[in-house]
Image 1 (spheres, helix red, strand yellow):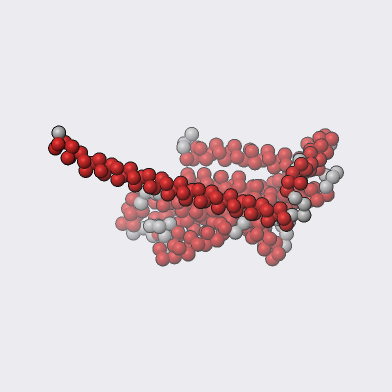
Image 2: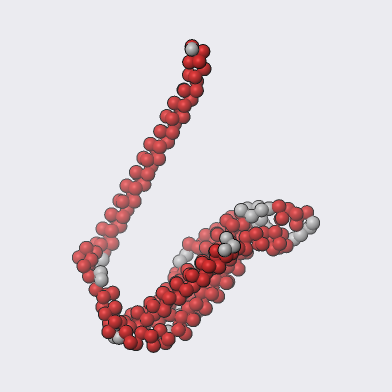
Length: 291
């Protein structure tokens, strides 16, 4: 009995030490989580007070009127509901322009993302020392909002779809480049090693060894980004980049009397996004899961 107790004592001590270490880590995690939560609450409270103090009115005082404008828009559109189908047909050319902006910017951004991803992926980069440079380039293009880029380009190039296309393509290159690079990092390197052994160039190794493995995921990400770019191109219309967003801006600026146009534009944009989402979701499942 004494021998058994003696042999079990070190094990019990180890278990108690592990338990104490685990409890210590749990307490530290709870403490850090509590501190972060407290900081978040303080930031939200101080930010709300600052915004409310600088506001012309007041958030709490204006809260009862939050539904006033939507009610006015919907009531006028309902009174003129007979005009909505004709208005939807009227805005189809603007919708086509918006979809074209999204499609072209997605294609250009995806091609740039492919190059940036392969040049910034560890183990695959053509120039390994320049990998941080290409990664920071993707960070920059991803961090700057499309609307900021579009405003700068509109000042240089003037209004129209071209600034919107360039702005969305730049942001798409950074966003997709990050996703493409992560997918390429998980690719099997054996085909690349085999191609290297027979003297294949870097482009040949990427084209034959990596891209066939990651193409389904890359196409899935590109389709998902196309949905996002449709919404982005509509938003950029508010700053004079053309498309259906510009028509929505004009209709809202005219105010009462044009709200049936506002509802028609929202309806056609909503239906377009739903259709594109359903189609792209179907093809993404087929590409990734084979169903």
